[in-house]
Image 1 (cartoon, helix red, strand yellow):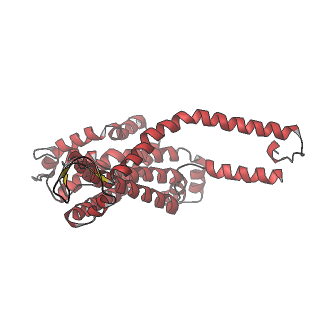
Image 2: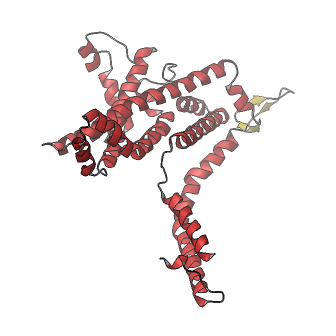
Image 3: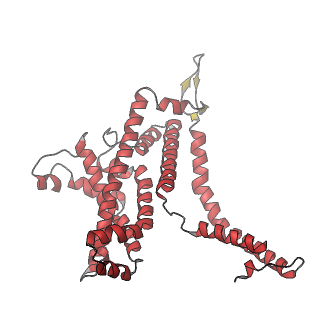
Length: 330
């Protein structure tokens, strides 16, 4: 029995020493964590607050009701947000919203299937497994811009893709071909990420479990469905969550591979960048804020519905320990 669960008599010096120890530990933890918290406040909290503030203003030259030209930032409230959902701007927004959602669902689904298959291959014991693992992880190690340039060379008019297909397809023009090129390039780039995390989950499964399944006469498919998949579910859900959040913010791959101002592949991040590059910082901040809320809602729903263990069991263990301490004190 731990010392925390033993009832302590009133007025005992031991209770005071235990309280002092806990308070000292809390102060030490606060001191050690303060540099990290300060950095997070500077690189995360401050930009978010600045973007929210900027989305309520409009900049540049503007003519007032008396015909005078007004320069600088002007407070417009929610005008930047309401303008997003109306007229031609609304059509561009919903097109970018659809493209962002479509890329997220399609790419993450393909990456999950291929990533799990890669993990199963890398987990097998065979000669040359190290070379196979290294070759599978190479695409993920390549920077996204470099990967986009590589695939742009493959998908150009006289590139390897057209030579392999025996057709002359203009992959960087408007249409299904540009969408397909982005899906192929993104899946090739990031499927190894899911494979790496799933491989880590596979290596934690004891071999005795598979041996027991063989003794019971389970087929390979039944073993995968009843044993492998449930046991790697925590790692797989975390990997899928990270990929969803990353794909929702996709920008550099379609921008470099296909190019800007292409309705077929324009995403919310690209739309915000276009507004910012035109010095319309207020609407750009409004787009960025909406994208931030979209990502936050998707992450919350994913964790609540599927139970992705992002923080691990530390929170649950802390609550359980707290309940046991209260029972011991009583």
